[in-house]
Image 1 (cartoon, rainbow, N blue to C red):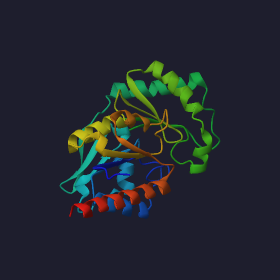
Image 2: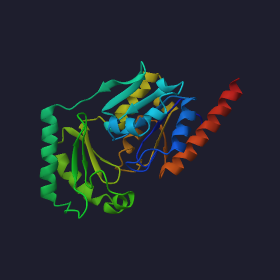
Image 3: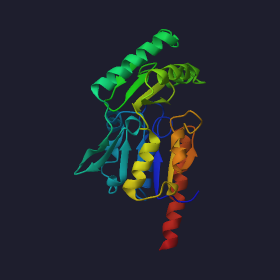
Amino acid sequence: MKCPQAAIFDLDDTLAESFRPPTSGMVTKLRTLLDLMPIAIMTAAGFARIENQFLSELADSSFISRLYVFPNSTAECYVYKNKAWEIAYSESLTKDERLSITEAIRESIAETETFPAHPKYEPMIIDRDAQIAFAALGLDASLEEKQSWDPDKAKRKKLVTVLEKKIPQFEILMGGMTTIDITRKNVNKAYGVRWLSERLGIPTSEMLYVGDALYPGGNDEVVIATGIQTRSVTGPDKTQIVIDELVKVCNKKINASN
């Protein structure tokens, strides 16, 4: 691995277990890497969840201005300025657009009969202004229950196929283990990578993307077309190893240049 000029991380099943906050050890490693380069977090999660779970633990970093947070599948970007998180951009959906997406999800569920009633969890449609998220098991299911619900993604693929016919004007991606995320057309993680590349003045080829869903159909796969370097992981433990490698190789590069 060579030292990139910036590193981008997915959140769920990359920096943290699905819908859980990163461990204190992971936050410490991020802080160490932030000393060396700009870092971005690109996720389908909403900003409020990210802020509540761990951003406060990084706010006192001397290099916090290097951290870019892209929630809602990069439909938004937040940066730290004047001791607060501010929106750098937002690709918000209109009220009518959000309503049409919500109606399409409900119609598609009824038509496909893909999601029989779960004995414990109700499906949720979550309106985050810039993104509509469909969580088939809601937000409270355990990691084990999420892992076993749609392991081959067949249930969600069936729903996505119907949604693509109903609302082709929007971006529809599978996220995590039980969710489907919908944003404006072409607003996805590739959009975020290109925006960050332009913002930092760094070619995408000199940046690294780390995620668990770089496989075909995964919500990280779209970044490959940008030319960014990628590293596939299977969970936070593997991500910590990648960060350790980055810190080592980048410190070696810095020491060699001094």
